[in-house]
Image (cartoon, rainbow over all chains, first blue to last red; front, side):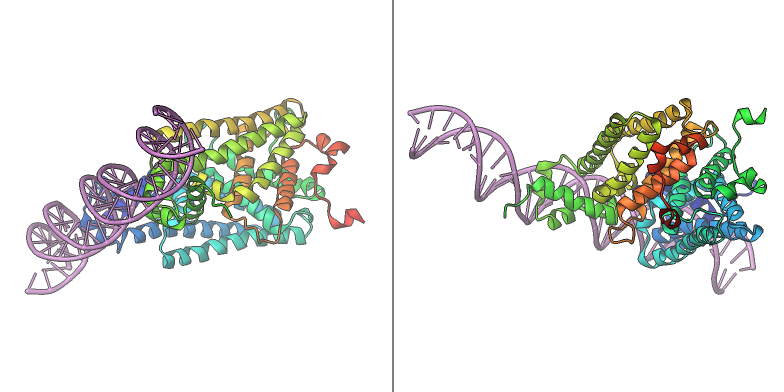
Length: 212
Length: 212
DNA sequence: TTTAGCAGACTAACCAGTCGGTTAATTTAG
DNA sequence: CTAAATTAACCGACTGGTTAGTCTGCTAAA
């Protein structure tokens, strides 16, 4: 049984403590104690408590940017891309819910320089969603009466909010939730014609009656 | 020119400071200074810094519960009730955005007893949304394949998230945003038949072409 | 020998809350 | 109505506890 490196142990412990108690309510002494490390160990691996917070932020946004680019490259129509982006984002909560919580809850407390770096990556993610919706409207798959920025932020809100309530032990699996969210969004944005395309039928949930 | 009472001035100042900097990054000394009061004035009006945080929380949740009950009583079909609830919720941001920010951002730091009180009211609001969706499915206006809890939380997420990005100076007015959100949700949840009812036509945005 | 990694006692700064005192309003007594 | 007494509202210097970060030193690997 080989022990994980100190740095990793500190990050993992801090992540869970920050999630539950908030950045300011968690002391370095507590992180150090619960991760089985020491003040010396902590400040050997991190310049400051702020740098630790930044590390947690960056690991998540880097991961999710990667996933979104992936969904974009694997599919060719806006409808498919949006569908996959939403599903992969929601399914990410299985592994990264604590990261997301800290990301959205504690970013206020990031130092100015750290905050700027994160903001850039965050903006890149936002722009990807805007483009997705814009392309969908441009090619006639999405309804043209829904404005790009508001629709995009609505989708973000719906998916991001999951961190506030999702529990692994809940009655719906993360995959089911992902499919429901994707269904809701596709119903909300697709034009009538696009939603009737047989190759897009897979986007929609089926009611029990239809299956019989 | 009569001055507002100390208590109000403290609440208003604290609200803005908490919103921008977070509860723990704002000291009582700073609140006192920027509101033109003093330590004595502060502790005369509040038992503790925690009680001030509670006051801010309670004023918002009480207001929004009221609005939701109102929307419920003024209309008689689930579709109309949901439509109005969403619109009144989003329009609330015009006045209460700082409250909402503090409500969702700093509730971690509420004392146990205070937190319990707020949790009860929060739960009442959640239950209202669940009932709304449930009744819509039961009477056949909403699609029966969308599960009540997930759909409800999706609607919450979409609307609540607004506090993260809404600016009064943005290109869309709060009323426009409210109408767009309501359109998206109605498209997502209504059955085909319900959405064709002429009395529900007002729920949907019209594209420029249709108006000519 | 050197140095990376870590341990833990120590410190300086910060901050929520206290306390003794002041002023202004309201109530009571004559 | 007037003076005295009481209370509400407020002021700001001070304190005691807390906490991020430092520093000296130890151990084991290179």
